[in-house]
Image (tube, rainbow, N blue to C red; front, side, top):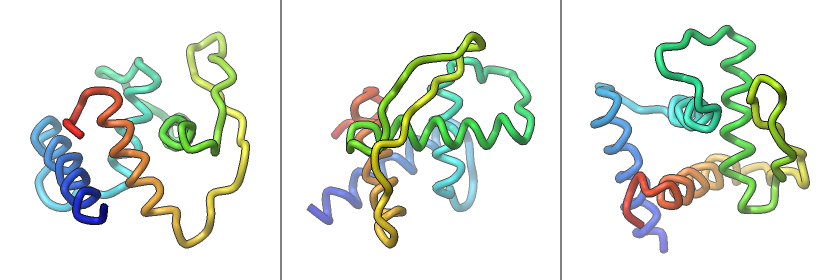
Length: 115
């Protein structure tokens, strides 16, 4: 299980590196940000303000943790921004692993990487 997790996480990092031409370390926040842009669907050639960037991170976290029961999608507003309702707290100490696991699941579900 742990080996499979590391193999799939490396697939995520490799995909991001190859498709976004990132050199050096790829951080978790950057991957979450890219998922937020993907989920909003309006990111191409767009500049986001600081508050919008924070909202993109929130959208991504909600979307990837929804299948684990932490959030539920409630709809989009008139500008097309998705909104979620919190269902339960994320356990402290497990956040990083849970988020990585959720990113892997998201990337597999969206047919971005092979599972």
